Image (tube, rainbow, N blue to C red; front, top):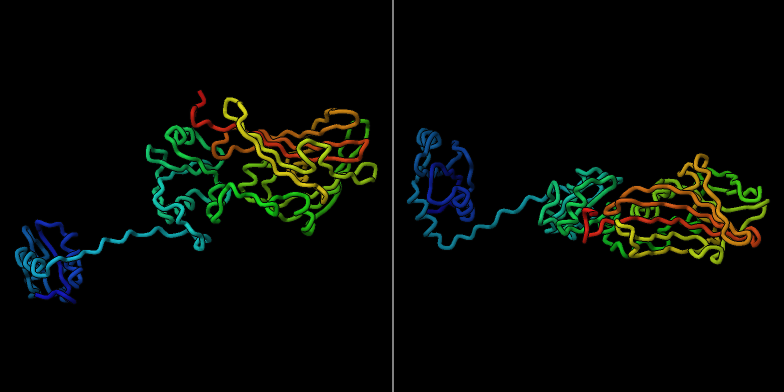
Length: 370
């Protein structure tokens, strides 16, 4: 018997499962449907066949029993049944051109609030990349992607040995890059990069200084939004689609940025890492010459008029203005202090600017902070 090109139906109970028989018949060229109609060529009826058998008899359809089906399969020899292809999850709009292969086979979960996408979109991306996504951390969880304002799920994931990626780290990987390769100089919102952009708006801001002196920040607002990973690492003061390029003036004279004014540098971003118990374990620095001004954004987004900042004397006529601001908590960062410092040597006419972040990190050796 040849079933190639024939429309067949299977009903009743067989020794093999119906899915197995369906695969074998399809491998022999048959089209297997779920209901009997005038287009049905053959009905294979097993034990306790019901309404489909009655309809087949009414229509005059050829009816064969299990023995006939087993003989058909046996005569065909080794029937190769192709494995059923897994249905691929749809890729969310806007991410179709991304290489998601780095997610294949990973056991993942998510937590916290996201800035660049909805949590449902993130989960869809992970599934489209072939990851297994659970609603919470399990023993098999390899990676947790965490936004900000996360809860106890993060500690639970770390306690189970999972790695934590921030939203920014995930986006870097989504671009086919390694987080360790970020940022490159042209991705930092420093004075040099901001100075090349057209101003949306410009003006001046006066800053009262020691000795009844007045510093003036001449600023230009430009369209520039740092990558979320930069914001996570170097301060929430830069979490804006507009950034402020600034230059400092004293009594009408422009001050010069100098690496010697501040041990951090002329314009720099310093990040000092601490474990949750406050012990220091690492640090990193982005350092630039400040020759084209500096990023003055924290003066605006940290409510300068309300905070006023505090000047402290360093040595001679050198003083430092410090503005404190708490940052968001990203990934396994449970607490983050964000300080924006302007150091001025009034005698030398020089200054240096530093944004200093100090995140406290959940320690994998003590994830519950006990």
